[in-house]
Image (tube, rainbow, N blue to C red; front, side):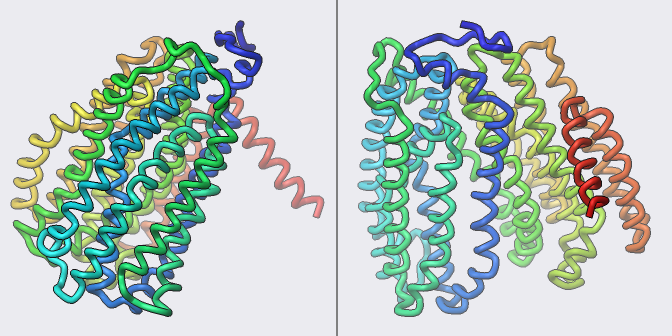
Length: 526
């Protein structure tokens, strides 16, 4: 059967058409899912800003530092899913895109069994090494070691639920049910922030705070399971030859896990090099602008979480649609972040001065400007990364990280020794720029060349980088705030004209124009 846009979908049962590639990757579905993802990430962030200082005051610096390590461990130990949650999303989305919904139940059950086994191994490992972590490896102060040990045992108990949640959210993501995912994940994230504050009214002992967080995770896991039971057609039984083998699960999940293990080294190595070869104070001057500017990743994160299952659903049957989605995803990341990034580059010194003082601004403003360029380039490559993974080739991403690591370290070391924290920022930005070029090259071999989307994206990235670098050097010449404001308004004026004439599609211009006319018309009627 052919859909209205010519896409062919296999018919396996009467509901196959309802889960066609066209529906799973339609613009309306993707926009709604992106909105859910953005809210799901933004709301906990806004809650944390005022709450965390309260928690610091109640716990004290040392106990709060240990709690941060525990929270980090809860997130990091989700790696025990061995990438199978992401693999589940890719495999199920591919089946749905092919119209083989009846095969999904077997895929889900196989994946969850594998994840259950992996989580039990991980939980056992944490339980065994918990005394070593609490008493030696993490350098926990002696008065807090017993609390930390009990907390680690609780985390070991929670690992199966954390890993299972990863798999269940992967299933829901394949069905583009990000409304359900975020309806569970957002309250769970908010409670993870608020409940520890409530517990401190009774006790500041870490094991009680961690216990309430673990209970929250368990409840969330149960909620995901109930949701999946309603979404997945468990009663349908397809030909098992349509199901994907354990070997394929392990192959996809293994490469994704390798990427997840290498990424923290690439992300955090600069901090260790700065501490070792400059100073610990320099780490603060570098880390603060880094943590601020990388919050921009909320935007591409919301978009690519939706694009990943859409790529998996369309790649094997409609590569033209895949190419279109890549171009659209990259475009919307650019439209959202370019104005913000230009503003950061131009007003970095003033913003840091108001927020943290003139001394901090003098040491960190250049770092913020350089990293802002790198974060935008890195954000633009997020869609290409998930395209390669969604196409079933996560090995390309993992191999790229393997190649990058030994090349990045000497460059980072040299530039940090030579130019300090600004050199470290340059090294990081160069790495993500090269990473972007290589990932888009990998994507170019997977998509039809005639579409020209990748060439347009590459040209846009180069142009945008040039504009930002130009703005960087302009701030050396223009120091008065009023001239900077004029310069920013001028750049934004050009940006709006180019976006309207060259970036937006005719259909998008029509929608925007209609809504603007309606808004102004409504104002006049009032």
